[in-house]
Amino acid sequence: MRFITDPQNLLSIGVGIAVFASILTLLGSFMGGERLDKRMKAVAERRDELKRRSRQAMKSGAGGPATTATLRHSDEGFKKRVVDSLNLSALLEDPKVAENMAQAGFRGPRPLTTFYFFRFATPFIFMLLTALYLFLLNDFGLSLMHKLGALVFAAAAGFYAPNIYVQNRISSRRQSIVAAFPDSLDLLLICVESGMSIEAAIQKVSQEVGSQSIELAEELSLLSAELSYLPDRRMAYDGMAKRTNHPGIRAVATAMTQAETYGTPLGNALRIMAKENRDLRLAAAEKKAAALPAQLTVPMIVFFLPVLFVVILGPAIINIQDMMKGG
Image 1 (cartoon, rainbow, N blue to C red):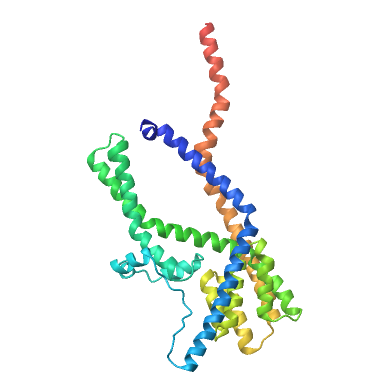
Image 2: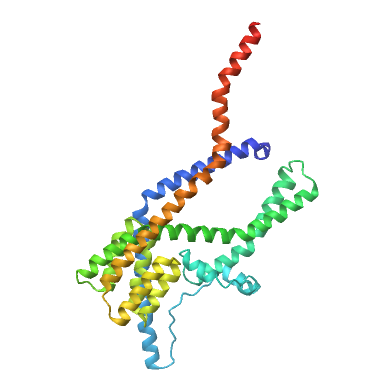
């Protein structure tokens, strides 16, 4: 019990967890090929399933109202029952939650149900853990009002924790996609100008760009699948633009839609869009570089200046002490 309540031991545990997370991150970079294979296999299975269900839907529609096939995933389980019984989808209604989940890479009704469930349960979990620690393990000498304030803060942190997690996933996913998107446009331009169809070109590029960005490879595979079964090709391009929510990708989707609608050359549009996206990537890098001095000010003051003062003033202080002892 004393081991858990000792702040120094807690700090050591936190450092150990951080080191373990860093090791997992480094190991994850070496397993990118396996993750890509799994995601591409999942996308291919989803495409085959959509085709099969679409054929079943057409057969059932032609033969009569015997069985109705659906193209949507069904969601059943404990979390679904809790969300439905408490009507959390209406209680915690957010008009942008479905769009945010798609941008984070979570598709279908199951991740949406999971999000609502954890947004409801996480405040209680955080409050319970905080109460157990403050009231049973170590209260740090806090008064009852301070403990209640800590419980309220834990509940608020738990309520916003799922949103913060989703936003972090959206940001990291968009950065990975945007970093590799200009190169994928160059590859797509080469494939189109060599005579390949747009579906085959997108599928080929998705296989080649996977080593650079798994997220972009998955998006291009989804785009290829949607182009093959959606009734309107514009819906597929608009879907990719909404899932990425980036102005460069949205402009490319608009240009490809206009090229197919009006019959304009697709190669010229891809060449211009590739240059514009490369300029956007360069502008984002320059923006980060310009903001770096301001971001480094506080770390330099906190970490570098004390060490510098110790290195400069340490020998002088030692000499003064030796002189005072000698005198």
